[in-house]
Length: 271
Length: 271
Image 1: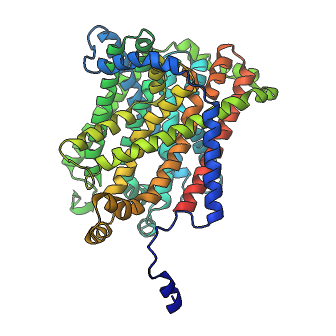
Image 2: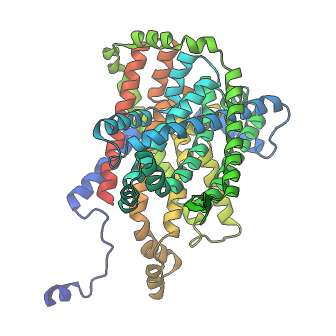
Image 3: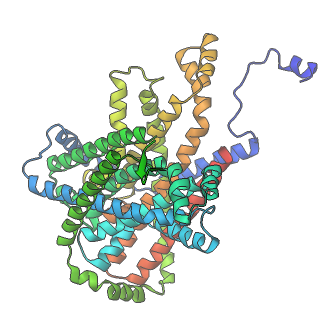
């Protein structure tokens, strides 16, 4: 900085540099955004009268959380919850088992190109389709019941876990894998002793996280008839039984919280 | 090092006998749990439908192809609604997530004992309940429509954004904060000049990432009546108009891919 520039800057207050340095780009971004917001607000129709009427019901629902009703629909809640848990466990096990070979195949440093492309394709399809849409299709094909939900969750688990596992394998330390290979290991031994120990902590952590997600997702699959607590919850909302709905929501939150706590402990132990 | 004595020669082993036994037992219990879960699913399944599934799938496929392309003229408004639900929902969520995150971060919270647990509870409950369930609830309260979708997405996103944001806040470099407070800055000035610039890139990344997820979620919110393209999907499903369903699924797939591409580009530009 020359002496002159420094002189110019003296006496002026410091100003925060803007987030986007190019002023033209900055202003066009801001203007475009404001224009979008105006357009969006113009097109959303809000029936404020209806909202105002509904506020009482909203308040009733919030109050229901202080007195949740676990007892009057206890058997329905219990059945739904058990079905959700069963679906979660079975789908997580199957999903994890299938996603390991696909994850290996989707890692470029392990798999040859044709296998890599096929596995990446499977991952892309599984990630692009949403659970609930897959569930609708599977319910249409396999009929109502937890089997459709189980297949949906397994399918979603494959996409999630394979992708992250493949990324972890691609980022692994080559030296260890080479050392195992140099000792004359077969392919399976190479995977078992050279690759697996490096990615195991992350695989366990991701699996725990996925179990958590699967449980949360299993709570909505019932909306489209794929089994689980969602059907019970939907019925409770439809009948305006807010105290039962609150009880179900509290149970879901509690289970998710304890799963998160458990996965924290397991991850700390593995790493 | 565990070794195996065989014919007076020592061979390396990975684990001791006790460890092996323990692991074997763990696997046994795991497999038993899985078998029980599978039995419950199997009991609730009509296997006749499952054996019939390939035929049904083929039937649906022939009905759904080719997609009814001219139907796309009716999809413009629903797509615009979907975009609005995702964008406005994300905006509202961000505005609400920032204070929650500052209250939840250990180094900025006003009170570790009282306010932090409340903020964490807000985060957990918002995260553990799916946006479809929030939408169901809000439809019962404020009536069906785009507005319910916006609020559902907003509530669901608060927890996600706040969680990632408070983790970013807890990881900031403390020396910068100290430097700002050494100049005699007030509490708010320390926040604005010491903490905010450090978390701004993370913040922008989180916002765009969540917007991407919200586009995915808002495409299906219509299934329960909360506006967007999902309304068209459920209407088409209800009248078994499979060519329309396949077109809508293609549009959703395209929207998801575009939003993922945009979010990847923007995040790449920020970081």
